[in-house]
Amino acid sequence: MKARIGKTVSEIKVGDKAYFAKTMSETDMLLFAGVTGDVNLLPINEEFAKKTIFKRRIAHGMLTASFITNIIGMKLPGYGSTVRNQKVRFLQPVFIGDTIEVGLTITAVDVEANTVDFSVEAKNQNSEIVMDGGGIALPPLPLDDTDEE
Amino acid sequence: MAFQEILGKSINEIEVGDKAYFAKTISETDVYQFAAVTGDFNPAHVNEAYAEGTFFKHRIAHGQLTVSLISNILGTQLPGPGTIFVSSSVTFLAPVYIEDTIEAVVEVAELNREKNRLKFKAWCTNQNGVKVLESEGMVMPPKKR
Image (cartoon, rainbow over all chains, first blue to last red; front, top):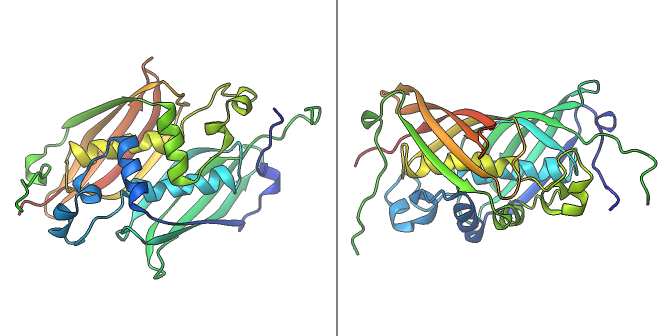
């Protein structure tokens, strides 16, 4: 199968941006709880959550953080990318029905090392920053031109 | 309707050096559900024919899926239910393949009892003892009501 890859390191410039936005559904939270086994009561038990400072269920922070992988794997750099490391800070709760937009910006490019540094910021529909962070990703390596069509 | 309150450990019930574990075989279903939730359909995760042509030779799990096993420990065991995640950083060291069994470990590194902040170290290893990722971060344990 012909490989289709995202941007290679030489096609990426400091300041390049990409975005992913999604409305956080209850289904997402339950699937995430099932996949990870993280059945912390805050995301899955409304009665429990009512008694907390949040007043209702909130999404797993790591679920919001997982939206970063969408941008890196699908858009910037895209197919064939891997993440070397990633840091995040959770600044505001994310509720069911919130629409979260994650923006990723390239902050450094090292062509020789084949790495890009990125920063991320996630906002909700009220433009509140719910998460920020950054990390280092490895863009896909250029393909051999002899690859069959 | 009365609910039994099931809260995790408060900061005063935790000591530096406390550890907790969670292990899981990463299934194809996990990887596909994770792709569905995040929208990350990178072929490295969902296309075996493509993956055969990559350095990894087979589909690999999303790194963020493996990290989330740490979230499991923090949210269900140490500190446990009611815990709030503040921040984390992670470094990915080796690929995780479908059917690998991954054990996550969380160790309490530092406690600030006045501010109710707990710093942790965490890591994940596969069935061959290879460390696949390292992490550290901060959480707020639940407060007793």
